[in-house]
Image (cartoon, rainbow, N blue to C red):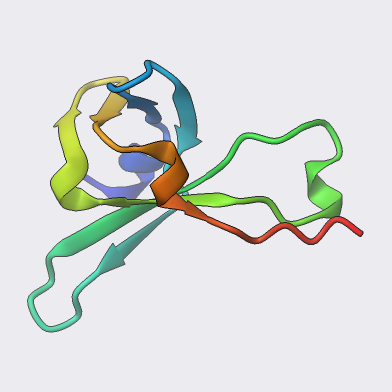
Length: 88
């Protein structure tokens, strides 16, 4: 699977059936070439271009299944958020 295909899939949390967003980036180990985690920006409002938003870091071990349309994960959203709010 190519990264461009992965970016088009929506990430859904199995714990609360909440949409987390779409994959924006990958974290991987340079030495082994293995994927360590997915980085998913939190969905924000209309004027999201003017400020930074939070991101979810989802360890790859918490990915339950990668399907044709969605990626199912099993995480606690509060523990997976990387804070980056800067909206003055």
